[in-house]
Structures are given as structure tokens and as C-alpha cells.
Figure 1 (tube, rainbow, N blue to C red):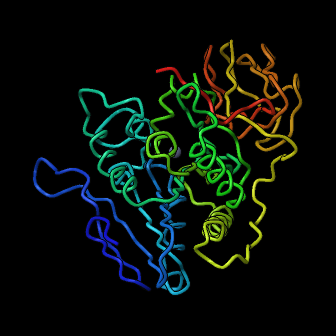
Figure 2: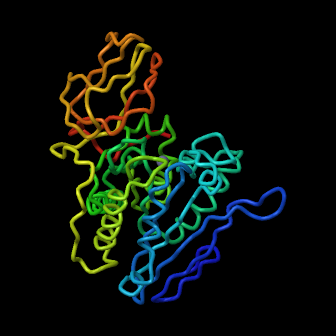
Figure 3: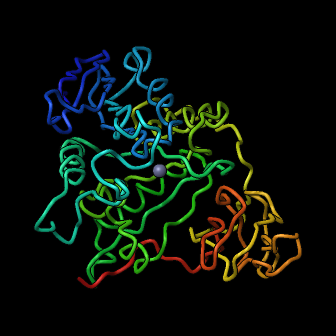
Length: 353
Ligand SMILES: [Zn+2]
């Protein structure tokens, strides 16, 4: 198996680079890639890290998974991309040098390509071509805001009307759910179809995997951005090994995923956000991961002197995944991401082109 210059032989690990884009002054931006290939054939799992350059916790997960020791007992192959955003890694920024837009909204669109393609779109397309050609499953390793609890996001599978029950769509969704469950972090459903398309979430890496390549994939949020939280990385490493077991790449002696960021698991949830209709200072009333009921206070927005101007209430039962950084809140601005109760959710939704 060959990805860029990394060519893995059976029972070994290969390291190399995938060319992303040429520099105007010579040389090339490259993504470092590591492949562990087992003696026996089997599925290919992709692990991608650091697409947002300030989200670094996925990098040690790739380093710890893709090892000689794994190659000795693996069926199939694991392709680990250490960073999908080398320029963002260098500057510790979410976006890349090549585009001011979110790089995780610029993967190929299942509805067809736009006529003009930006540099970042070309970079993403190059990587995606390798994924489409080789991946049986993909985990895209991200982080949320500082103080976030770890969780996984399940993307919507968008299908034309009438195809909801197509066997390949059912199979894709079941396999995606099986790998999310095996990973073991709290699963939060992505936004509904309308918001998914409005926010270009179908063009995130995992969104493009399920919607364009029809490859089971999900996004793992490994706690805080900017820093590496050791216990979250430990849990994610176990989670990835359990995904490999689920895919038949390792013997099925599942390990217990260490309990990090204890969150309620009594009901399914959907990712949404809470915002404030007034400007003021943020005073949190709950911690991320704490169960709240519909109508409970999540935060106060106070005036400069600490007097409450507005109480932000939970729209439904659920839990805050993270609060925005800082204390200053402006009218209409987002104060937190929220996992709201969503028993009524369907993860396969129709979409009219
Ligand atoms: Zn991210």
C-alpha cells in the first residue's frame, strides 16, 4: 500500500509525505503520513489529525497507534495523517495559510464541484482522493474549545428523496454507528439536514466521507484545543483500538475506554449552540458535561457590575459540551455548544438538490 511516498510492506510501518501544494519560492507543503500494515489483508482505517492547526491532541493519538507493534498483529492497514494542516500547525491557528475559511468546510461537495476551486479546496481534494481510493473507515481527530468534554459527532447522511431505505445507505449508517459506539466517547448527532448544508458541514472531512465517498466516518472531539490532555489521549488510543476490533482488524478482546469527561448517556443528543440576545458578561451556571433540564439556567449574562440582565436557559434537556472563551458576550453571539435531547432524530435525511 502506497500513500504519497509512504509505501508499507506487510508486517511493517512506513513513513512518508503526501504533497499538498507547491510553494511560490520552491519546495512543497507536505502532510506527514504513517502507515502500519499487517501481515494479513483486511480493512484500511484512516486516522487524520490537526486539520484545525490549533487542535493538536490527535497528533499523539496517531503517533501512539501507528507502530511496529501494531503492524505485527494487525489485519489490514492503518493510515495516520499526522497533520492535515501543516501551516496551521506552525502558526497554531485553526485555518491554514491558504484560505481564511474553515478548512473543514472545503472538502468535495456531494452535490457537485464548484466551477472555481481555491488552493485549500485543491489541497483537500488531493487528500480526499487518497481516502476515497483506500479507506474503509475514517476517524477525523479534532478538539473543541478549552474546557470541552470529549465527544464524537455523527454526521447526517443526506440522500435524495426515496433512497432513505437503500441497503447501501442502511449499511453505511449502521457501520458508522458501530465504529462510533466502539470508540466509546459520548455520541452527539450533527445538526439537521438544513443546518448541515447551510453551514457546509456536509463538506467537513467526515461529512464528505459519508456523503460523497459513502465511507463510514466520524469526528472525534478530544477535549480542549491548543493543549494535549493526557487522559483524553489515553482514552482515544483505546477507542481507536476498539474501532479496529469492531472492523475485524484486531482480535475482539475489547478494552474498556477510560471514562473521561463523564457525560449523561440516558438519551440521544444533537449538537446545537446557545446564544445570548443581549450583550454583557458571561457567568456560567453549569459545567460542561453536567445534565441540565429544559428551562434550567445555563448561564447568566450580567452587566458590567455583575447584575443579571438575562438568563440563558436550556431549550431542551441536555448538556453543555463547552463554553466560548472569555467573558464578553455580544448580542446574538454564541455562548456555548450544547448537546440537546433528540430522541426524534433521524440520522438519514433527504435532501432536495
Ligand atoms: Zn476541529
